[in-house]
Length: 415
Image (cartoon, rainbow, N blue to C red; front, side, top):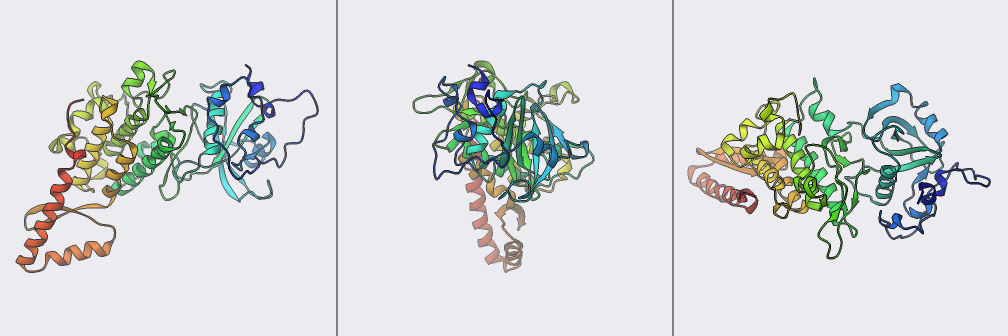
């Protein structure tokens, strides 16, 4: 079956071609989410806009996208990935009635690149139907002759990869790193828990985009696929992804599960902790693969300082770092069934952003702080008479014991 048979609007018809200007994917009160398996049927020949009825996407012309990017001017160039170059543009209701005025990112398929029609189609299908605070918002698309373009919301801070690894930039503080990790985890959890589960398959720092407040959003769904349903335990696919992030069982067997994404999340969490890339050929040989180098030290609190990013300059809670390292270790377990679900990952991560270490009467304790007032209250309590301080110390010690005796903290059985 040819791609022309899938979506007739992407190609010139034999008869008169209707003017696509101002075309919007029609609204519909509800619709059944179509999956990639639906598109493999030989009966599919309907318009893409009909398939995405209810998504309220805009169908742009190539001319319109040239206008808003100033003919893909170099001054609007944002970057380039496996799909192709990305340029910044600006849209408003003058371009399309009802369109919110906003900056956008326009991704253009490189016809000579590594990806192609299938990846473009996959991205439009998934992001055209899925909406979540931690998924990048799809504004519209263009499918004109051989041209394939995708229009997203603009993410002013770019990718996590650039923010974390770019030289000569201010290092991301601990709280920001944990905020990014939580946001990305929520995006993955949403995909895994939808009625028709989705496996992202290419979770990595370059695919995590950041808005002005460092809110993380997943982008680039070209390799995403429908997950197993019903009695299925996995889906078998061609092995695709990025070196250093793909789960070992997937690389060996081609069997894909949500746990494969969890492993990739563990790699990214490790990158956030260490400030190192998943694969770095510029490092000494034993340190080139981040997981192989760091994993043995993640379960040893005394050695954790050897892997933590020195650019953090110790400005983080040691207890929070230990818990995050323990979580990364769990996500990187060799046996996929032993890895936590993303919903469990979120529960562990969320408190770590605001975790602070304090010292009371020579005993090391920790507390979760959400604002400056609560920190002041803790400080005032430490100045009270010894008897009252001792009771506070006892309560906090119990809190610490509960934290360190949690299953996630001690689950270090060899995979």
